Length: 209
Image (cartoon, rainbow, N blue to C red; front, side):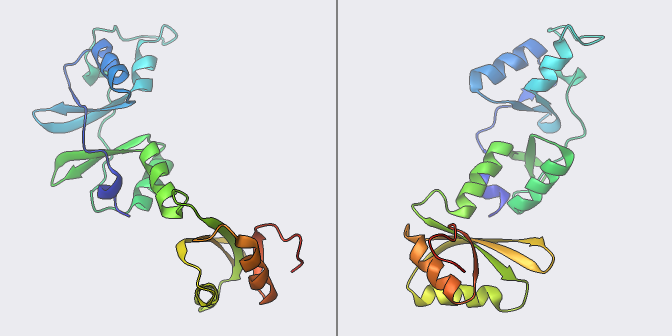
């Protein structure tokens, strides 16, 4: 999944000379928390609802007056993404930099924006939980062919796999989380357990591994 698949294209932006009070009202009226700031058709900054609240708070040592321009409080330079970036790259950038959004530039022009909510929506789609499905959580040895052995075992039982996510759990093990096209996961989990797979979900009872 790429950024272009999840980014918001219907953008609300403001110019650098928009007042803080007006920018905050624009956010409230549109139900958004981030505003790209433009100058001469180019992206020059980003301002968030938190930026505006902090800038005008009486608790701030030198609060900005509400009629100040957003240029005085916007974040710059702006970290951006490309439409062809993988979503996981954007997620890592946002997590490491603690950003709530990433404007998306296509050939230098603002084409969209990606927020944390967009990434959560992408995660839901990637894991397959937006469709009726069952969940299997299996510990595998991190050896060539182990994942193939697992998927072959499942396909032999004519069960469709909607999604597979794997991550290293520590040591030499991998954890594989599968969404399958059946809500009846216990019989399949029991069969997998009997063939040497370590089942973490559904819970082992009433069978033993």
